[in-house]
Image 1 (cartoon, rainbow, N blue to C red):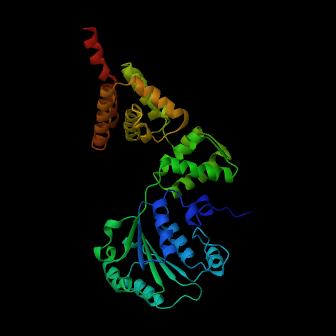
Image 2 (cartoon, rainbow, N blue to C red):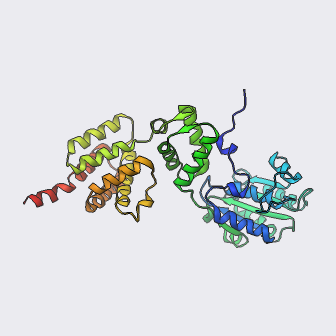
Length: 372
């Protein structure tokens, strides 16, 4: 049986061109290689799964390539590149600071730094989760980080830049990686699906992208999970079932009921949601997001902030046109208050039901005034 390789590894970028949604950073690194203005220490920071360690590896591979392409990418043919691709390169050294965070670990690293590379020009030391180093380890590392041998380059990666001491920050070129946008994740998932002969509904990929919360690695892991669940032809319904995501349709029905002041219908729909096993806070949090999406859908300028696609976007635009702005603002405030107070509430279900009843009566006062 052929060994399965998860998509996050199989489709991991191997050159700057294939890195998703970090163009400013990859352009800067390529220009540094082009002009041979390489710093001795870099700090890559940002959320998880956005390409920090990947870019560090690509950078290490590219600066040691003996036959760069005209675009200043690694050739993948020379001895250094082939050794790197086969995971047997002695030019790159990775340390996980989460489990190697003591002074002794850093001293071992400092001893290694003195040894020049056998192939290529640089030895690159990638320290992942660098914020996990102890205070003593940071202090032991300072002098080497400031004045390393000419062949040594340090790339520090972290998700929590604020935990790194200022003396370390001042010795590094700092690159802040962006959270990856939903549309960029969807495009990449479409490419992966095409490569794997998987047929996927675009709305389904959109749900995966939103669930990943800006992390490409998470999105690819979820994609593999859905393929295992739904096979090579999965739909929007397969995704929301597997990920336990509340269907958009419930929120549209709730808002329609609120606009018609049908409190009983709204409460029945909420009961249906609870019977499906969803938490009340999960629902009210999603309802607040739904009101926010309706609010941004009312204006052509802000509709670009709506991170959904296809026919669901059209449904948002249609429902938003039926919602008065004052209704959306008050409903958003009420749902946000309920979400904030949910954990301390003694009767959580009643708290949500009361909020829904109040939202369903927002437009009733205006209707009564108009009748009068």
